[in-house]
Image 1 (cartoon, rainbow, N blue to C red):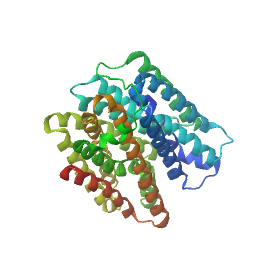
Image 2 (cartoon, rainbow, N blue to C red):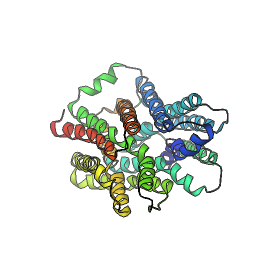
Image 3 (cartoon, rainbow, N blue to C red):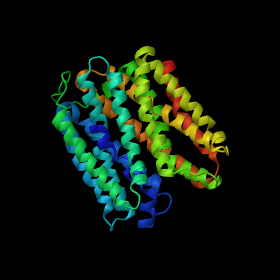
Image 4 (cartoon, rainbow, N blue to C red):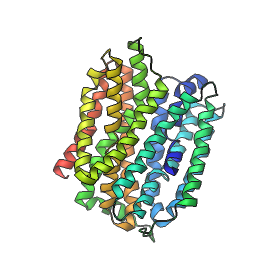
Length: 376
């Protein structure tokens, strides 16, 4: 619940992007820039949290609370009517920065509670992240005639609530081993482990696809409605459903991994999401609305199902003293990759109307598959 509440900050801007563009007279590129700003803030935040081993040296629950409160304040800053694109980019940057004290720190807290069964726990945790990420789209749909600023007020309030839930109900776990000092060598030492590298590069390939897909789901839906005038679905509602169904996939994947193995299950999810990337140009062109939506639902499931599995592999192959730092650094690199794929898609979208641009997302799963097969 804490992870769900706090990660609702992530796509708070995306859920009301059309209102922001209209209210502040931004151009259509604002979606990619504002999304990338959050990602860049998260990257810088994970770098700072990782270098200073924050979640290993200090109580993770306290770090989570502090990050939730400060992130909520920066998110709330968007409602100021005097904002420019620059000021809004700064606000989204710092929202992303403090999300670095929420998502990877939440995984660290989960890891501190489990000697065994971490995969299932992270399945629920990442599932909560997915629902939190999708939630602003649902808020936009159900807020009706309320001002668009209400979405920001609600998500900021949820983030503060999430921080309080964590500090009050989730004390430091029994398997936590506090890091006593800053050791920059630890950041580089973790990649010497072959199994850790395999898990990390699988995760990097997965991240190339994930956030670019999430960011462009509303664009994909709106584009389809423009070319298929008979389509009657609600873009905000189906944006929430397509992204949010990934939460269920994370939980299902975790249970499947208990029987089939974490690595095998992650591999299967990567293969399926790669197939979706390659098939997307053909499916997006179909005039049959149900086929189009079912395909997006399936893609929304397999694109995220492997995320908690890779996090499990990363955590298992890092020593207890630097587990939080390992998760944070891998997140840092992974989210840097998301900026590249988002911006490339944005450039392609500006230069062509072709639906084939989304096939480029297959690059990530292919690299992830190679990492798992070769163990390099």
